[in-house]
Image 1 (cartoon, rainbow, N blue to C red):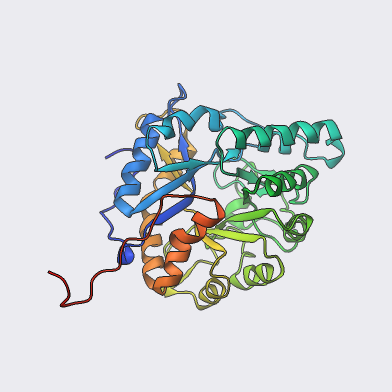
Image 2 (image 1 turned 180 degrees about the vertical axis):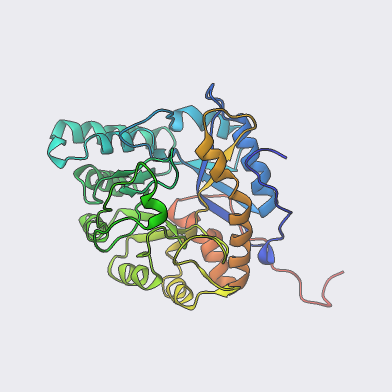
Length: 356
C-alpha cells in the first residue's frame, strides 16, 4: 500500500455518485519528485470513487523552508490524464501576500507584479488560485501560523483578476467573529500568538469588493476555533452570492467543532444550510498525499494518516443526503464552479424486473 493512502478498507460509493475533490495536496520527496505522491493519490481516489482531484500547493507564509508550486508538479499530474486539475499560488502568490502583511507595503508596482504572476498561472493551465490564506493557525509544532485580513489589498487585487479570468479562489481562513486567545490545545503550540484576530468582517469586505469573484472558503465542517457554525455560513451565503464552501468531512468522533455529523446522523443545522444553498457546496478533503520514505515532511506525513478516515466520512456523508443534493455536492457544483469537463454521473440502475 502506498504511503499516504492509509490503512482503510475499500469503500462503496453512495449509489455510484462520483466525487470531485477540490482541495488536495501532493507532497514531493526531498529531490522534488512527485511521482510517488501522485500514485498514492490515484490509488486512494480509485478506492473511494474520486473521479478527479484538484491539487494545490499548501499556503506558504512569511517563513518558507520547503516550498513548491504548480510548475513543480504539473508535469507529474499530466501523466494521469483526466484525474487531476491544479490551482496555483500557495507557494508563490501566498508568499508575496504574507511577505507584505502590512497594507502600506503594497505599492501599485507590487500589486501589478502580483496580478501578473496570477494571470501567468492561469495561462499555464491553472484553473484557479489556491491555497491562499488569511488566518492560518498552527496545528502542530512544525505547522505555520500566518495572518493577513481577507480584505488585504493583494487579496482584493486577486479577486479582481479571478473575476476577470472567471476562475475561483480557494481561501483558507479560520473563522473568528471577535479576537480572542487560542483554545488550550492550540495555545500550547509555539507558533501561535497569545491572541487570534477576528476574521469574519474582513471576509465580508472581500466578498463585497467584486461580486464576480468566486471565493471558495475551505474546510467547512471541521472547525478549529468554534465560529464556523452552520448558521453563520447560512447567513453569509444569504448575503453574498459569490461565497462557496468546500467541505472537509470528518467523522463524529474527530476532534473538531461544528462538524457535519451529529452522532451517526447529519447535523440538522448543516443539512438546512446545505439544502438552502445546494449549489454552493463542494467536497474538499484537504488530503495530503505523500510517497514512501519522503524525508523532511513530518507534518504532511502526519496529516496523510487522516486521508482514509476523511474519505470514509465523506462517503458516509454523501450516502445520508438525498440523491440530488448528494450529486450536486459530490461533483456537479465543482464541475460548474471550476469549469471541469468529462465527469458524468453513471446511468441510473434499471428498475427491478427490467432488462436481463
